[in-house]
Length: 380
View (cartoon, rainbow, N blue to C red):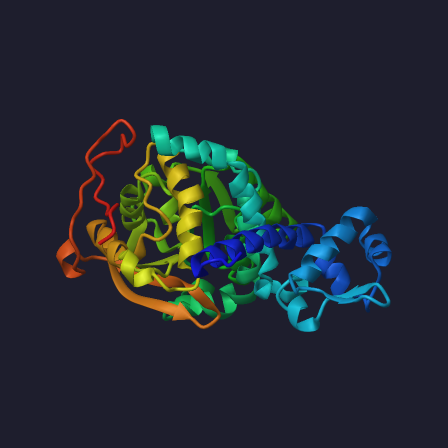
């Protein structure tokens, strides 16, 4: 049977999706790491080295061999992982390890039934239903932070390192596992750091890491980020892909503006998309991030009565919401090692007319009790 080009594409997509689960298993079981350290080996040798059941390892090897990820010698019945593949599939690859992100597929699929139900009834699925999502996100983020936070990210803000060494007050909004704060606290002992989040699990992990490092200049607090009530207490505030998850991003940005001292700086890391769907079509990562947003970001926000801003809210809308909160975007930067994100550098000041765009007020409804929030929920 001859398939049409589109049917052929769908078949390839299905095949790739199933192969993607093998990549996740290869990462979680450490099989890629084991194979990277071995010469060509049999399934028995690989399984023994990894401490795994040989029958499962053998079937996994067949899948990744057929998927052209692993090389196979049929005469010797051995398997090997090419070095150029190991450079993107092993933990030794650090932030270049793409295999870690494949773990999200299983997590999202496990919540598919509940997300589908939301298509019928509205509302959302709480973050607690996405088991391991925060841990996987932390694994992905830590690799980037370890490699680039001190060497590149903080350098995006002119003069920030000098101020941190002299001693300033720093906050991380939606700090998660707190690794970014602990890295900064260790590097800049004269500054004072606080991380805010609503997850007791991740806050406990941040405190534990701070204790292991014997850091006395960092603390972690459980706070409603949209109602901080802080007034001009911080010189530098950061958020790492955290704004679009919030139920009320407008209130969070207003709280950030209120918490900043005059002359303070806000560094916001978010997906580097346009607010216009048409501008994102064709980007190699856009379809996957829209899907991730549908399966997690939007539904988690709406589960708490939020507006469901979505991961792909984009620069045009970001500038609008920043301005409405009293934050003036001074610069939007990209980094060569990060093709996905944009880095917004903002200070206090500005108004909606300063940064262009159009106001869109969301009316209250049964499925969106946070009505009245000024956010763009429709594609421009």
